[in-house]
Length: 276
Image 1: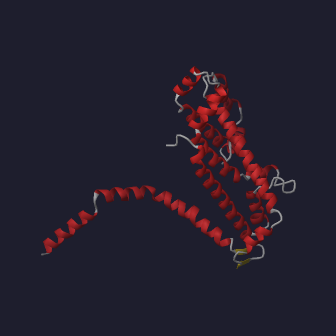
Image 2: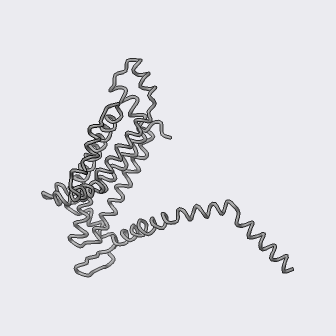
Image 3: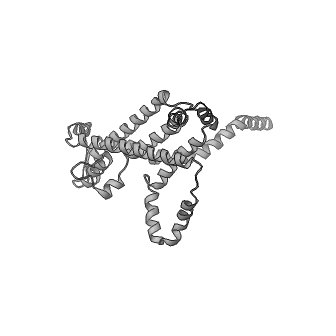
């Protein structure tokens, strides 16, 4: 009986631990670090920020008391919030439009069969004649969230999309006598519209989070003329030490980013073609 029971238990364990379950467990182990990172560094802080927004937390006064929706009511009556939102809209919209237009223009230029060897040689040789300290400072700016490297990568997205457009379409258009600007409008833009959608979402979200440039150049002035929402959030939380109201502003920023992303994503049904 003992041997039979052990055999049955062994077969039961083997039956449970199937190859499919082993594969699933392996997959979960691979994604576990990413999931833990998201929970610890994204979800938990997000919950805490929402909890703080329901409190009046003044570090200087040492007070932390529950106020419910008082911070959100304060937001509605804040005399500066209207101007801050307007500046944020103009700044983010202008930055996204100029950034994407420049990136697409450079990608169109690089997509042509032109010789840039002299420029490339100069760029590759320039670190030799520039001091190490200067290049370190330059790279510190290039590697920022809104620095040159991310801008270059965005241009590369457009370049990859342009190179994926079938050449036969342009050849057929040239045979039919279609002008170049119509080729761009009727062929190029529809074919790269999925990449434009992706780049627009990333660019607008990044533009709404611009902080370092405003902090260094203008500190939000003169007046509120360059005070975007992120910088206003910083002022309330880290200059005036109103962490509850600062948390409320961060929730509003999250809602704005989520709403814009939702709208852009659903507009793809009308403006995005050839989406895989």
